[in-house]
Amino acid sequence: MFGGKAVKKLVGKAVKQAEEKPAAERPAAEKPAKKNGLSEAELLRAPASQYMSPEQLAFFRERLLETQKELLEKADLTSEHLREHELEADPTDQATIEEEYALELRARDRERKLLKKIDEALRRIEEGSYGYCEETGDPIGIPRLIAGVLLGLSSDPTLVLLVTIVVFVPLGAILEGIPAMIILVPVFFPIIARFGIDPLHYGTLVVAALGLGLFIPPFGVGFFIACALGRTSVEGAARAYVPYVLVLLAGLLLVAFVPWITLIVPRLMNL
Image (tube, rainbow, N blue to C red; front, side, top):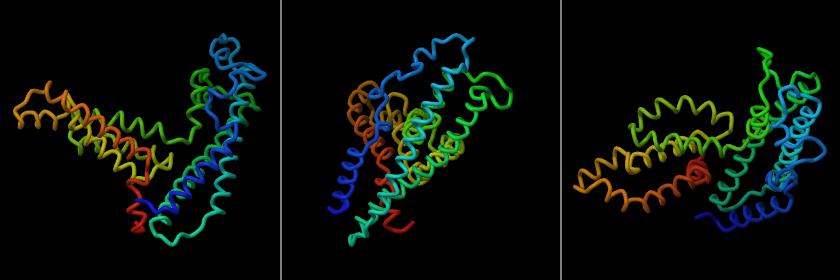
């Protein structure tokens, strides 16, 4: 259980961030679909002859500038929060706050790299080469460009963590943990490094996802073994097991999206 001071500090910070939340950070649903130029729907319906027309370039320039502004505002907030940092007498309080600051700094480091990508994209818009492959000169396509602006420039690791769960839980049901990790961990680890996800946090998530998959009905190898040892039918055991699977899945989501669950003890031990 965390100390009272740390909880109050974190809650107060969350409230302050909510009050200071700029318009650029609001969900897309809160933003108008169209300002002075094309809307996204109009962009997708446009004929190929209008590809990278001045109107389309203006659409992408506006999106990139909005993202740039949002990232710069987040960087300012981070600097302000770091200046407000105070040492706590309680080691647990101090470790909690330091872990939060470490995660925030990693996020801002990713965003600094994204700012360079945005500057490069804006430069290509001015040069007239935006929307075309740099190596072949072929058109990239409007859907892929929109995905690049909305997702490729995102620094949020949530999607990576969700994909990890979706991939490793079914894989754990049909493979043993070690072969699954040998196959996929070398693929995912370079990705998590780009998103600033702690390797210990990610490794714990992978092991937990594989463990859940091992006993998930009706395909989990461990689930079949348990049914054989208990001399019960797979159908009957699966129905009785569903509530427990839901609880385990909730626990897996907590491990994925609340990093201090896995990182607080190593931080206290300075590991």
